[in-house]
Image 1 (tube, rainbow, N blue to C red):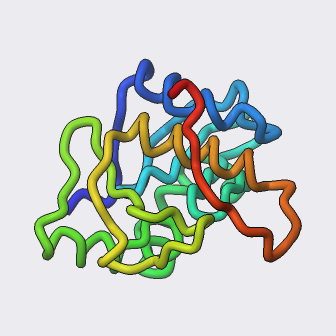
Image 2: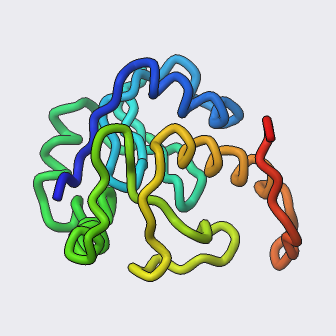
Length: 155
């Protein structure tokens, strides 16, 4: 199971378009992704983590060497790579290849669980696009608001 995924500059450019609303993402250079599509981005002031579950971009490391050191630890793999769930997915025959990532059948932002039953394989660009659009659309909703339907932009 590959816990780290690498993608072309073109795929990254398309995948991150719908995250441009997050301060700090424009101009950051994608380094790698987790098997779930969470992105590790090099900014002018350090390495940032784009968390697709939370819809957040946080500066986590001073440089790529610090990122690598963190991802070489069990706590780092559990936190940033969802390693246990990724390994369980591989054991269930869900192993992304090419431009694919593991993704959520029902996104956690819409109530989906972080469980193997909610994992599927998706195209990386599609997974990041949908997550970016969802998080942008719900970020200003009050706590407890109900979402009745989802319409992907560009559909």
